[in-house]
Amino acid sequence: MSYQLLDGKETSKQIKAEIAEKVSQIIKNGGKQPHLAAILVGNNGASETYVAHKTKSCVQVGFKSSLIRFDNDISECELIEKIEEINKNDDINGLIVQLPLPEHISEDKIIESIIPEKDVDGFHPTNVGRMTVGLPAYISATPKGILELLKRYNIKTSGKHCVVIGRSNIVGKPMSILLSQKNETGNSTVTLCHSRTKNLKEITLQADILIAAIGKQEFVTSDMIKDGVVVIDVGIHRVKSDKTKSGWKLKGDVKFDEVAPKCSYITPVPGGVGPMTIVSLLQNTLLAAKKEIYG
Ligand code: NAP
Image (cartoon, rainbow, N blue to C red; front, side):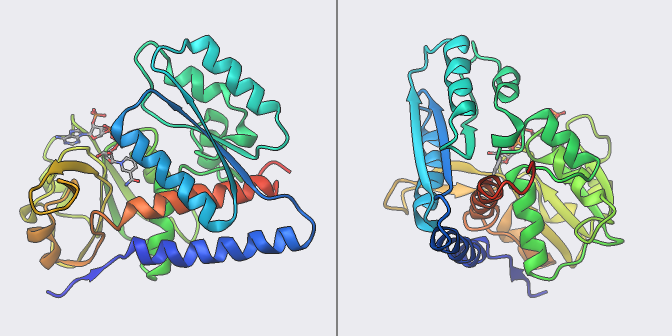
């Protein structure tokens, strides 16, 4: 079977151009440049890379971006004080705190200390709750990006059986909720799988659309899927390689080479879900600047 790549890199370029156009309109009309602030604690290599991509993307679309860095030993209290200062700063529209945080800091407390109006990652319980009941909300960037990618490739979800592997609060769980919503990008029957799921393969074999957000390299193999499935690979794993200049290459949660030939569509890693996640964050920041969610 010949498969089509769901090209997140190219799609994200188009969306960035659309955002840049909207930003120049705002500025032409005398409005303010949207401003995203990012907090980075410590010097985790992967987090440094993600934040660098986000900052660069802000510049590409004409946003202002600020990076606030702290050492690993910052206290939870000090971090919350900084967040509260940003919450009150009218010049900043959106705030993200790059996860994971050091163990002595509660991620839940940090997420809850960002006011929902600036929570452009869509992790605050208020945004998660509003998303769940179908109210306007900032939607977590990775599931939002996946829905956008499906939409731009005209892949319908209505009536389909979507199987999501992984139930994290930032990917799997919101993904399963969004796909089951009574709307154009939902209307599917969803099965949410996790590490306690029995007979996983029996379930994945029924998937019309399979979303892999497991965090285990090349976990999904060709015997787990049926012919013609759409596969979305969320996983990102940095593995050593002597074939690349950097000495690293990226792999996903799906064993691409053997799975792709059975698919109708599949996302590559890199260049699939990753770039779509970043543009979704930009879209949320634009919504924040235009006060479209909370007025
Ligand atoms: P996570 O918090 O580690 O969650 C992993 C989920 O997979 C958990 O729900 C876990 O089940 C489930 N799982 C683990 N082993 C399993 C197994 N053998 N069978 C079935 N389910 C299993 O992961 P995450 O934050 O959602 O991230 C998942 C992957 O996506 C990671 O590789 C991450 O780096 C990547 N990611 C990529 C992007 C992007 O923009 N492309 C964004 C976010 C994350 P339990 O709940 O039972 O433990």
